Image (tube, each protein chain N blue to C red):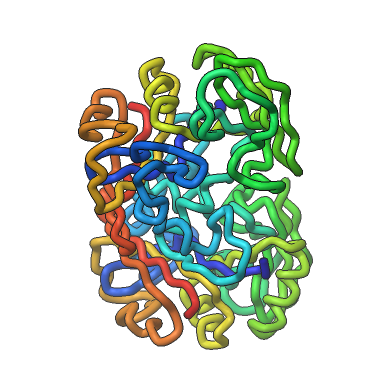
Length: 214
Length: 214
């Protein structure tokens, strides 16, 4: 099996926004509520950040437990890594995820500004100035035969879609409207020329969209 | 996380039969067609018996690729292992699966008749005369911290359900009626006193039922 580039558990609003306007330290999703966009995942048994027993094991849990399965590296944009823009002012920021980031693989952060790697527990963040093609080549090599997760945010996913490098996407659509922010699409139909699509309504109220390459 | 006992990709008809009448060497599911019951799985990219590239990566593939994920052992009834009944006439029968069975773990076959273990490639079949509780204890030990799959058939699943040992069940319901054979239930509602249930219609035409313990 060849290595895939997979988008997993990426949440958008009914009007296609993956993040609201005005990201900051206090509001990683801008004016959008993470619970509105991804609350369906937080209640599942295998959600990557769960630290207590329990949780649901229905449909939604198939998606959260698939997040890490067979993944050997992640690629993310700098705006997923943190709220800072432009040149790094210092090297204090280590991501949103504390001392034990849930990735547990190499993570490649795309940026135009050099930054030394950061190792936190099982995760190492590498900072890369590269085209999508180059970044994917580096990440696949680091993934050691496993798949690569494309973590987001919206601009990064768009860039890799434009370069036709994405093999599968799982996007959850929440029943909220955001009106503004970072928009993944005006309609998911935009992808149907290149992808098959299964539309799967979940009992939790979100709709899971599962795309795979034609 | 404790070890779970999981039923995965177990196919039944709309009227609840997991197998037809008259199992034989030529008809492992009796008068039922395996394609009618499990055809949804055969077309997926990660189906365990797939030996060519391609296949779908939509909803159904989440279920087929979950079949082996995190599984360290299987328990099956003798009627899943083969069409023979009563004392073993000889030791020639090695299961339906050829030289490379798709299990790749220890498999415990429940039987009232002693039989030496069989190793075929990465799979070893052990033959066990045991209560469900004893069989589960042995299988969990062999699974080395991973979950145990309860492979079927119907009688074996019923036995483990009656002993309240099953943690999760994924049952696919095909839009065919069988009328007779081995019946898992008259209605899945029978399990609702002990299990949560997500009902998930698939674009392929089957309905996936996902049960997890209350």
